[in-house]
Image (cartoon, rainbow, N blue to C red; front, side, top):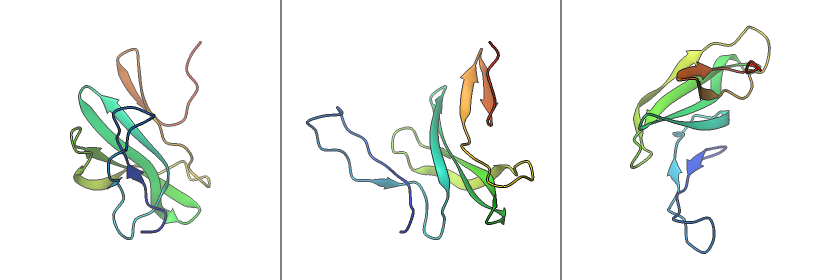
Length: 108
């Protein structure tokens, strides 16, 4: 599986063996800038991936089971970009009890 993203868990950062990898991307998928977002007992896996063409990727997302980190459903497009090249670093954040998506600057 080329350029695939996996999740590994461990009881501690040092001195313990991690789990076997849980592959978040499936055969034939690829993307970059992966992130896991934890919110209200739910886990979301977000990354860029196939878009209009190679230089215009879309942002894709799927919910993960918080106990197993296996997908709950299929990856779906949640943002088609701005029309400019190379959508970068999709992030989900919680700020003042609101869930925010995208790349932005927080107010000071």
